[in-house]
Image (cartoon, rainbow, N blue to C red; front, side, top):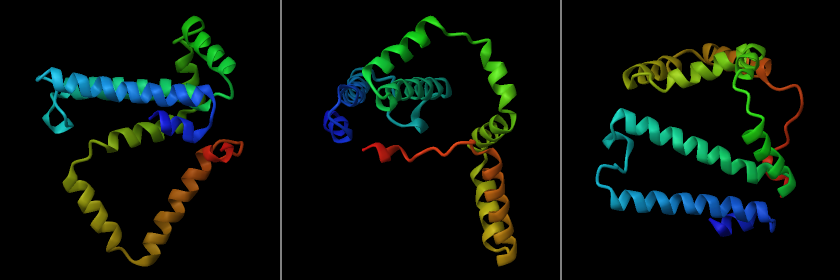
Length: 162
């Protein structure tokens, strides 16, 4: 993981990013080998253990992105300071209210993860067996919806910086 960090650039923030992920993987492996109640795959886990694992993994990865995306260690320090000292959870609902459509799509995507496999297979067959015109209309609708919720500014591809 350190080499992965260095591959992205010879800056301390990338080295920290790689070391952070490498350390997290090593700690995970250590815990999996030492504690028999921890399961290696989601299918073997209890629902609470699986959700806890997802929660921890998501937040660790998001924390790591701070180092990856910041333009300097000064910016990293400022971001961490804001998170620690200026955290205002009450602003979240204002943020959601400003991006209702985006959050609706996010919620829909999240809930679709719980769609039974039978239904997914049925919908897949329904679309693939549809006439070409119907498939084109579905694609046009999807593109239209994406364009409607895209951000106003152009977001450069993350690897343009490397």
